[in-house]
Image (cartoon, rainbow, N blue to C red):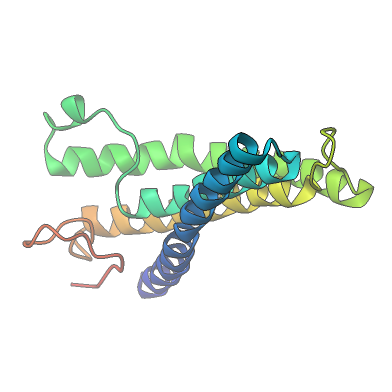
Length: 186
């Protein structure tokens, strides 16, 4: 179990670095959007490339931060229902649903994204919009996002199992309300 927890900590560290790093892309997207709007209104100039860059940046944040949201326990769930259950029941449900839904979903999406990306990369696919960008980088981000989500799902499964069996203190909860990212053994 120690090796699995070490793997989980490594995955959490990678997810944290990526999740925090891509947040700056939102600022870039806002600045590009603002500049593009000013140029369009003030000088009657616009560019499809600038519009596509905004979409690429936002899509990159969405895809690569999904695993970070899972790590921080900020993913979507029905809190009104889960709040009625005991912590142990919530942990068991998280473990089971990660195994039967999240891992197969993220794995299937990564599996399907690979040929989708590879065909685009090999063909040098370009946007059909005039002045548009190369498309394969956006498709690569989809692939990487699902791979990162899959890795984080494995990390969460390891941690939920260790919490349920009493091997670690729950890394999602501590007395100060902070949510540490690394699992530590009891």
